[in-house]
Every structure is written in structure tokens, then in C-alpha cells.
Amino acid sequence: MPMNWARRGGYFQKKSSWHLQEALQNAVHMNAKSIIAIMAAVALGSCGKQSSTTVTNEANTMQVYGKLPDGREAKIFTLTNKNGVIAKVTEYGAILVSVEVPDKTGKVADVTHGYDTLEGWLTNTSYFGATVGRYGNRIKDGKFTLDGKTYALATNNSPGDIPCHLHGGLKGFDKVLWTGKQTGNSVEFSYLSKDGEEGYPGNLSVKVTYALNDSNELSWQAEATTDAATVLNIVHHSYWNLSGDPSTSINDHVLQLEADQYLPTNAGLIPTGELAPVAGTPMDFTKATVIGERVGADFEALKLGAGYDHCWVLRKGEGMRLAARAKDPKSGRVMEISTDKPAIQFYGGNFLDGKAIGKKGVAYAHRTAFCLETENYPDAPNNTSAPSAVLKPGEKYLHRMIFKFSAE
Ligand code: GLA
Image (tube, rainbow, N blue to C red; front, side):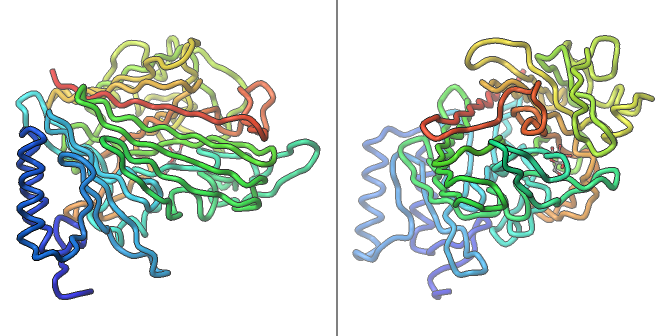
């Protein structure tokens, strides 16, 4: 690493660009003219040397985050808005690295699990913040049949000692390097998943876009096209703890899901094909309910999932609609999730066991974060009653998700 580079704020940055970054961070509330003036002054001060920081507009920046073991560089991008929300995304795994949002007193804190450095994300076995694909969640026995041909996938997971395919396999979309491009308040990542990658057919061209607006809405959007029929379920896998303190349990968060049914599973967490009503069960989140209130209930689904780890079927509707609302009563932070997909996986962080040492050295303990992953049904490729997960040449896959943050 050159002498004039150093680790700062969790990533490597050219020292000469530090004051530019600070100036830009302080300038979030300034008008564009002042910002351009600051940028010009810093550029002159650096004696014409090239800065490592590319500024696309106002306080949005791109920096080198680190290097993959094969030497390729991964960039990190920062999105900010006028309310002090800051979201960081990296080309590695098209991962959402952090989301800082204000609480009811205006105190800003990061509400996601993850790592400070790229090196940390390289050890990411829990899919913190990741874009997961080609198929998010599980495929029974790691096999599916499409147009008469059976495809064999890695069986990289075995809940209940029953092997299955999870989250795209051994090297899914969360572990590949995407190409990022920032335009204003959005970052678009692209990736070509080649025919046969992780056993899936078709050359799949994928785009994932993150965008932040001044209404505190962070959106994640996945798009894909293929040159041969394939199956697809690209999901976003952030771990949330709205308290901003990742050492605390999320069992005290209050959750509401816009779902009257869920998918019971077998011991291998593969849906049985039944759509069960939530009414009268601990799976009922139709009204805002404290997560920990019934998580230990004597209920088969909760025993099989070691807590909440199921797919809820969202109420039918057209286009983008509310899927979930989560609130941390202490800080007052609220997150609402809207989507255009038919279902949502609510995972209560049951597999977190304190082994992953994350941001600021925190060991992420059991149920210190939850995931709300909008999706098609797990194992849909083997279930004719599920919405189709097939993408054919000439069609376009689209999955949109909006996280809206507020405090009350
Ligand atoms: C999903 C699954 C969980 C678990 C996590 C990742 O949410 O439903 O069972 O595999 O991903 O650890």
C-alpha cells in the first residue's frame, strides 16, 4: 500500500482525500455552489495530483474499500440525504454495508450487522447485507427440473441434518465482485452470471440498484435477463437491529406483517406445499406484536425453525405494497418494507451464535438482528403451486424493495 494511503473509517483511503471527505460530510446541508467551491479548493490544494475519491454529486462518494484475495479491487459508495441518513454499499456481493438513521431524539446510529472492512465481509457466512442469488433461500435436495432436464446444485446447508441448496450455493451473488456505478443518489451494480455457474442454466445478466431519497427511503432493486430458461429468486439479506446497539436482542422489537398465511416446512426447512393460516398461532403478526412474546411457544413451526425462520405469504395486490413494519420501542426507530414480490422471509437471527465478530468488534449473539427478505417462495422450482420462479429469454426479472425509515 502506498505511504499516502491509510485505513480510515474502516476502509483504505488516500490521505489527501480525507479533508475532502470531511468537507463533503460537513457540507450535506450546504447548497451545491458551496460544495463545488470546496471541491475546487481541495483539488487546487492537492497540486493537481489525482485524488482517490470520485465525487459524483454533493456528498455522494466512491472509494476503494479493499482488495479480494485475487487482487481485484472492490469499491465502496456512500449515499446520503438531507436528514442525515447515510447508506454504504460495496461492489463485493452488492452488499449494503451500513445504514445510519436517526432515532426519535435525532441520534444517528447504524442499524445493520456487518463488518468494518472488506476483509471482514470476505468471511461473511451469515449473508449480512448481501444480495443473495441466484436462488434466495432453500431448494430441496439441491435439485430442480426445468424443461425435462434435472439440474444438480450444491447442497451447502443441512437443517435437521437434511441437505439442501441455500442462497445460491457455494459462491453465490453475495461472494462475487459486481461492477458499481454511482449516478447521483443511486448506485447500480452489474454482474454476469455465466451459464452453469453454481449449476444454474443460462447466461444471466443481473443489475442491482440501491437509491436513497430525502423521504428516508432506501430502495433495492434487482433486474435480470437470461439467454436460456432458468430459475431465479434474488433477495436482499440485511440484518436489522433498529436500536442501533447490535449487542441487544431484537426480541423486544415490534413487528407487523401484511400476511394472513405462512408456509409450514419439514424438518429441513423446506415448505411442505401447504399454505397455513396464521390466525390463532404464534405466526400471527397481522397486528403489531413483540417478536419475543411467542417465539418460545410450543408450536411445531417454531420448533423446526429454532424460532422464526419462515416464509409468510403477503396479501395479494398489484405492484408495490407494504409487506412489513418493524419498530424498536426504545429508540422509536421504525422501518417499513414495501415490495412487489408475493412473500417475505422473517428470520429472527436464530443461527447467530456470537462467533461472527462484526463492526467495532461486537460478537453478534443469538437474535441480535432479524432479516425481512421479500421473495418468491423457498423451493418454488419444485413446487407447482408456488408462483413461477422461471425466467425465460426475452423476459425481464424485476424485484423491488423499499425500506422507509422514521422515528416516533
Ligand atoms: C435465511 C434462512 C435462514 C438462514 C439465514 C442465513 O434467512 O431462512 O435459515 O439460513 O438465511 O443464515
